Amino acid sequence: MARWCNLAMDVLEVNTAGEETRKIEYALRKLLRQFSAKLVFMHHYSPNSLEAIVKCKCAMNSSTTAIVEAANCIPVMPLLYRDGHEYCNILAFTKDDLKQAITSLTKVANIEILSQSPLAAHSARQAMTISVDEFLGSLTGRQLGALVDALDMGYYDLPKKTTLEKIANRNSVPSSTFEEHFRKAEVKIMRMIRPYAKLAYLSSN
Image (cartoon, rainbow, N blue to C red; front, side):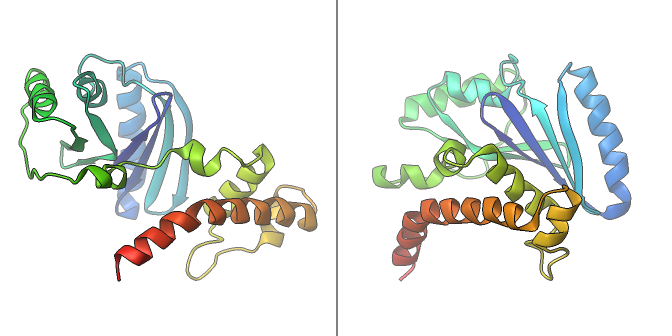
């Protein structure tokens, strides 16, 4: 399971064998109730994949995110959960901050450092998740809705599972109107990705 957090909502993404997905959904719902976490939305976007949107619980004393941030470090999203263990990449700007984060984490859990390496100052941004607002903040609600529907219904799958016309019909929206919102969303996102794509391309050559 992978978790993304923006300090308001958690996005949980589970990928597993198809026959286990329903069992995991039941277990996840039970766990959320135990933590008094509010489930906002849950969706099976493929037979092997489950997505849940949950009100953020990062303020809990035992939250990895809260502990790491309290030490002036950055938890790099997503956090991963596998075989009963939580995996977190931490970006620290000083050795003292990293030591404080590790010391605080050992008070609530048994931890193991799998790897540790320095980053050049100019590459710190590369280790961080780019702000959602930076990429999606310019999209209107309808444009975001069109994009989410296309993603959820398999428009970007290989091979494609649907067409824009089918998505529009399902939402009782004229095809031309839906495609206009969708194309504008695509164009805005591609324009935002362009400088990062160019940087990545130039760095790979």
